[in-house]
Length: 113
Length: 113
Image (spheres, rainbow over the protein chains, first blue to last red):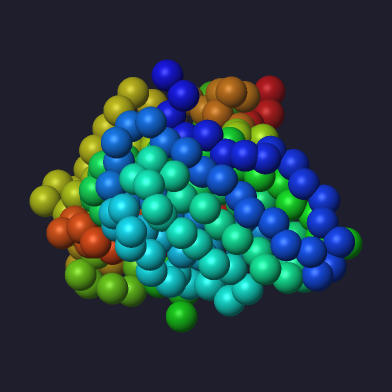
């Protein structure tokens, strides 16, 4: 009973490097989300998807790209990492949007030096 | 513009006491109001949620009070226990879907013996 799985759990990047965070859900949910969590800032939405092949910008999309080629996977890419992207990243999924229980992954702690 | 304002930022409560966390929202179209609980190193998890057709919802020691005219809702934790120590997030969205949850900035609750 995996739920929402994020890979990797920890990562240190040098400024300018690129990386992809993977989110996988096994609940056949339509909606998936990427949030970042910073001290005192709460959970801020980066990008989200309302179904396979769709993506949309959230509150803080700059510097990130996403793809949802398969329903169960939602990828978050950083093309050129910056220290301001040091954060804890959470993926979440929902059966439908905004009015049902969102299931979160365990988070990815990313440090950009 | 912060759509959901949460207070206080941190809260210390004696064991057995009542913890109260407040949230206020701007968008009158919001009609789904969940609370999420997050333990250190974990992703948030749904605790309790309310829709505006009722003014109060209780699940065990956790109660949401909702005031539609004031555009406010609050979480009450009765008989607070050290195991309740966590970060709590209020959120809001439109029940009609297609709209991601908007989160408050969170409240770090510490219950001390």
